[in-house]
Length: 353
Ligand SMILES: C/C(=C\C(=O)SCCNC(=O)CCNC(=O)[C@H](O)C(C)(C)COP(=O)(O)OP(=O)(O)OC[C@H]1O[C@@H](n2cnc3c(N)ncnc32)[C@H](O)[C@@H]1OP(=O)(O)O)C(=O)O
Image (cartoon, rainbow, N blue to C red; front, side, top):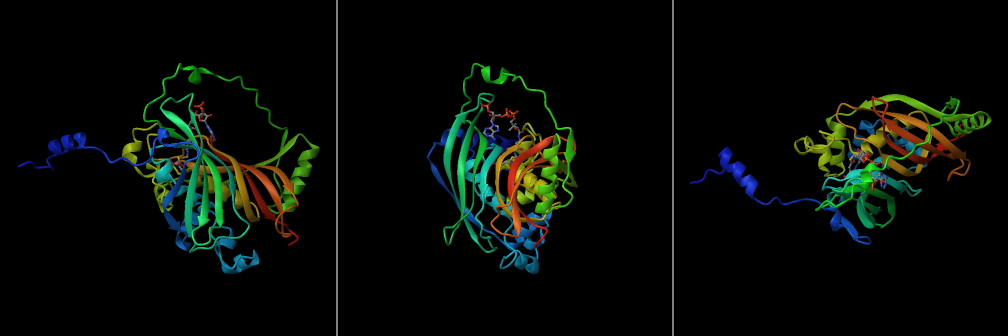
């Protein structure tokens, strides 16, 4: 009788059986397709606090009821980074489990009203663009518009447009022209001076921008904190958002990939850098994010730091207690290499309130 557990027999069986594959290839996506993501997720206090604590997001309004009340919340709400990560995590099984690189995201928006724990999240995506990759014939580039809604009320809680490289079933035939084109790049020019705001209130950002206007200067600074990536940030946090991308939890498969190892979920890298930045400001409300890009991989043992450039400040926030500031944040690693960049619009508390 065949012993199926005999190693040679089993190896042969493994080679001959079909693999029940997960995920979709580039060819499976067509512009206009609507994909409802199943399962949804209940945004729990545990999930929220686990995400915030591991990414060093310590804004008291998300942790304590008195601080929440002072911000006008009924109770500590769901943090926008956890909401964003959960809205994306749920989509991975349908959109990028095949092994796509998360290239970027834009038009990330949140409603003014806070989202409370216990809310059931329903997520849906539409394919908005498919394109061939001129540099990587084995991949295509797909963009989706995704909306996370309150399953009970239908209110939109988080929306964005995201772009991934997705493996093709069959590589494209190319004439090789895409890979060769080396661009003429202008010499980088930096301002003569860098100014850091004195504090983290709206008025401090306005004053720093005014000072910079008088000089050839930029308002730009780095944050001291760093967070070394470990098994929790790399594997556990994405799994807690139902993100099934093998990049984050299958060392066996990833040992054969360009990174050679499991890599940090882009939303963990980003949220960690934002946590460092927020620790040096008085955040009132997150409005949105644009032009987000993931430049290179972050893996276990890498340390995520943050750099901030203040772009503009306007006194036009949803509350008199705050003003609106637009930032560019760059996450970088221990070798000073940028790993994430994006612009962020946030309402920042005024000192006078
Ligand atoms: C979620 C989730 C997965 C993850 O979270 S994975 C972790 C986060 N992502 C990463 O770590 C990716 C880090 N990035 C890289 O390692 C490199 O950027 C990458 C993907 C290897 C590409 O390197 P290249 O040097 O080849 O980069 P290029 O700048 O030449 O770009 C290649 C093509 O992509 C197009 N492209 C790049 N960025 C964008 C963008 N934001 N939007 C649209 N298209 C973009 C670029 O134009 C190039 O196009 P070609 O036609 O010239 O090939 C999950 O599962 O979703």
